[in-house]
Length: 255
Image 1 (cartoon, rainbow, N blue to C red):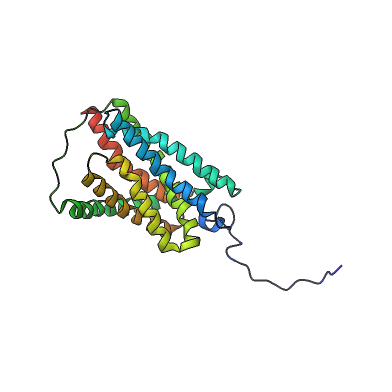
Image 2: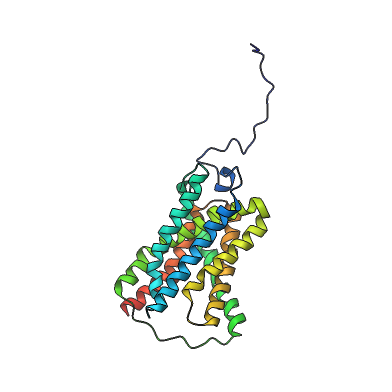
């Protein structure tokens, strides 16, 4: 048996990453099949479109989707979890590791995200409506339970589901195949199209919603490329949806 010492090999920084320090992109060593990636990407937009069409068919306000989307979020997380298990990993691996400093990073990202979203709204409305916004529709009657779910539950489930689907799972895996920039754009486009189901009242409303969220998706994807960690982005996304979706829905319910 050869007992001579082996030559010293330089330490590979990527191989030195532990399960608690590795980002989702670092941990996914083998490229996922394109079919699996696309399957994860398209399910959520299709479910939201189905939800919106179902509400219209039942002659109910689309505002109810702000609460019922929680069901879509649960299904989306289950699908991502199944895709992760196919790689021998778990859904929670996408969100690891958690650090207390994530609260500070999340707050910073929230400021960036709010500014980016407001700019996206301005640009989208400028392009679609050419600077002249239509008159807002009459405020619908919103049940109190919808307002409570929209403010207490939906912002968190939306943030977890959307970031797991788009930035946590799809973007890094697409990036391995088409490059970081290509993956950023593709995911942002799908993220924008996902919101069609929330704005089915008119063609311009759909266009403005899709363009706004596409631009916001570019900001979210850019923030992921910056940090390569999901928890701060989830915190920022939760804060954004709490401010711009949950609280307005609650005000409609109690108004």
